[in-house]
Image (cartoon, rainbow, N blue to C red; front, side, top):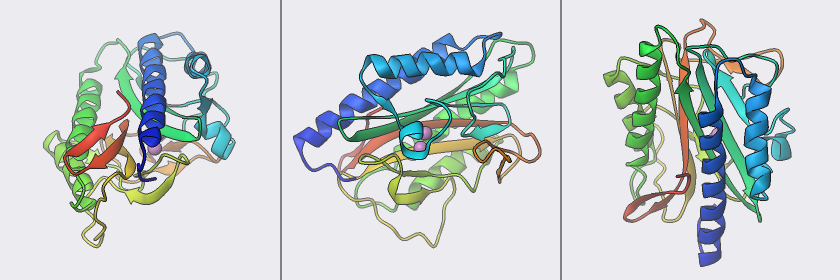
Length: 248
Ligand code: CO
Ligand code: CO
């Protein structure tokens, strides 16, 4: 959607703060020994406390309130009986709706454990790559500069980007136009960013794979070679002065 009124700003800021709060509660709570279902319940109760509705379930019938993707799972991990272990790379992706407005955010943490240095570097590089991509989100500039910045940051850290996952427009629905905000510079993409457009920008960095595949469950998306993936995501409004990040 494109922000047009003060009411739009207020509605988006409100849901942005809510999904960010749920995300951060989940990241703080993630501990070895707990199941991903227990972690999802923490996110769900946070969203409910603020009166927000989990978007993946509402829009797609996803079997969970949030997506929890561990290690080689890149996206859409289903909360379940999987027990978190020391050193796990845990991504939580929280999206929700309130009063007709949607926001979408994600972050990745590494649980305390031996030999987790490389995982920490992957997560930190993905966070920085996302911020580099967001910094390009200014009206009048080419949309593909976002992907270019994300890929550059990934490469400078020694990591790869996933080429078949992407960010998207958001606001009135969970996924809307513009779609295909990829993690590399698509030279054929001539789209320009317009003032007020609302984007969910996402970084997907991996330790090897450039393409992900879907599990037979129809949801879980993972690397075929078990390489690790770290995702970060923010909902932002594009303005003439640059991006306004709503999910902080
Ligand atoms: Co998301
Ligand atoms: Co998203």
